[in-house]
Image (cartoon, rainbow, N blue to C red; front, top):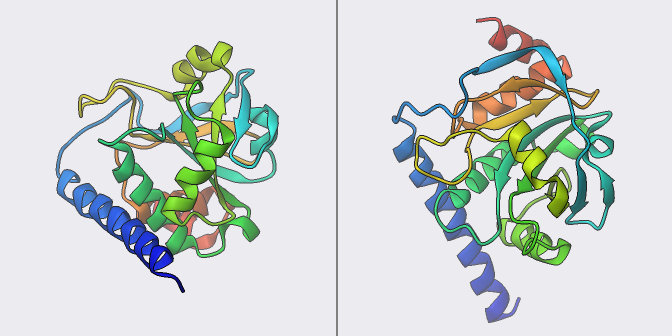
Length: 207
């Protein structure tokens, strides 16, 4: 292993650990991005939003959601404030899931900066975080950005320009749950398990 490779890996680990530490520090802040936290009833259908993904897919966001339950977070690759904390939450979620791609669960980081977040930029961002096959990034078409933000976004109590809540989608690509801002990774895993129909997730969500 080259010195450059070792250094890059160390930087990535430090970035994720710093994000996790900051996330724990902020967990005590009672912040909520939406007026309606929890189950979305009735579930909301996905509006027409065209996206490009880190793996080169171009087409409707809805198409990338069908068949798997999905956790969606907002971000942009040049963000240096709250996005690293969100990314650390997804990194921890991925670690706990340990096989999301083969278990009907996916994580999707949705950019609010389609001008700069090209497939190459998003792939580099994911690679820097050690993202696995079950975690992808996407950016809406510029013409669809307002529609995407109207559907997924909300006011941030942290003073950020986008919400740090997550939107959870069912296998039919419908919005069924909104989390508070900066949810704990373990809670996200439990909710995703519930949507997937796991017995543990059902028991947790029913509490």
